[in-house]
Length: 270
Image (tube, rainbow, N blue to C red; front, top):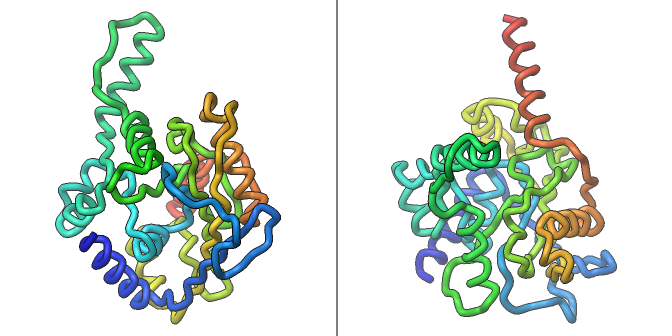
């Protein structure tokens, strides 16, 4: 696709401007052996989506420069200048958060017996599932989809529990693990700061290095196909074992609690 070609070209140019001159792709086999090219016998063919750990906003630009995938984004993104047309060209799925909250509230009320059913239309999980089934079937010309099952960014030192959305389709996925070299004065994985501060500090660093580990295609077992939570944990443990990132059990709620404490301390120091 012409859009994908130019999308990869311009995002790679952006990465050069940001100082990402060294982006290394490493292939890992089932035994943990690494090579610079796909090992013999590595699974090929259609799969549902890419899944990756999530460390920084830079992740998105990096993956766009490699295979220009589509993402799940907020509905508001589609209406933004410049970013909106790009996200639509990337065939992103847009989440209406207000509708999701209303649907969740209706479901909770129905479960309590407080009201009668909710409508709310098709959930995002269903849209993701349908896209993945089409891609895994091999007959779809849609762009590949990339999902971050942690649901938030982390510090690149641990892998948080996965959400189930990327695994409800029960089809094979392609795991990727990002590892940023953090020996410089600033790391792209430091996200406990306002976005404009983060971008400024990124621009002040001379150069960054990042390695992308391409793990073996993950084929779910029958039990994992029937249980998305089991499938999600199976993929996470494979990424822990072959990608070299320890697992942790902290969640997005714990991250928010940390940010709140940090903000309170910053306010007290003023």
